[in-house]
Length: 121
Image (cartoon, rainbow, N blue to C red; front, top):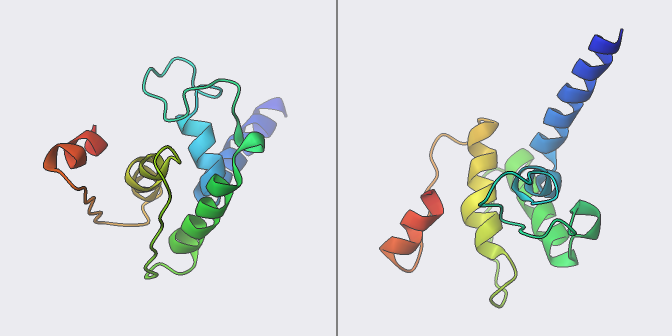
């Protein structure tokens, strides 16, 4: 019975990551949840989903809508430096869409060629 419960938890974890961008971001790209990854987008182990800034929560809700309901929506998002715009929009969101097979093609645009290349790494 324990095997079935663990499998149910695993599937619930996957489903939640598919429909909740904020959960996906902190689950797979934070130091708190992936301490062995040297390239985490959330480098502090003390920051987790529950303590996420309102900016991240709002952006994640918009991305959830674009990913799950309104796939052809066009969004514009502006904020000053240091708000993790690139972490979400050029890193985590494209990975999310690829992993869950929601998009076949993704175009990442940056001001410079080297900037775009860095997002692909």
